[in-house]
Length: 81
Image (cartoon, rainbow, N blue to C red; front, side, top):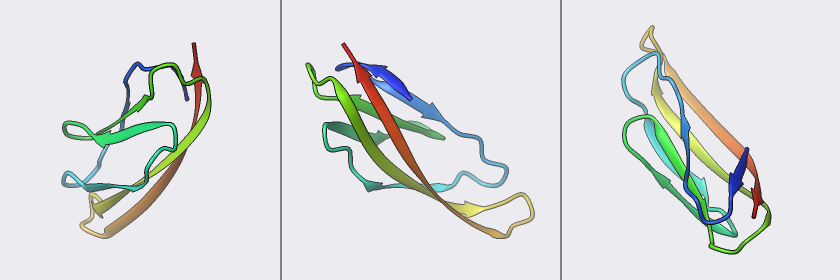
């Protein structure tokens, strides 16, 4: 994803089952990642940082058939001025 330096960017995801448990498994090196309201993860770089960053989050829960689902997403970020 591409974001502006110092500005928050939300990632929305859809859940077919009950609201999943979401955890940050790798924090960004040049910014901060947090769990937002239901079904969102928020990335924000340090003000003034320009370049590449990465982070990872995991979603754990049940799918629409009540079967366990564990998904880890690694996100690459390009931060622009």
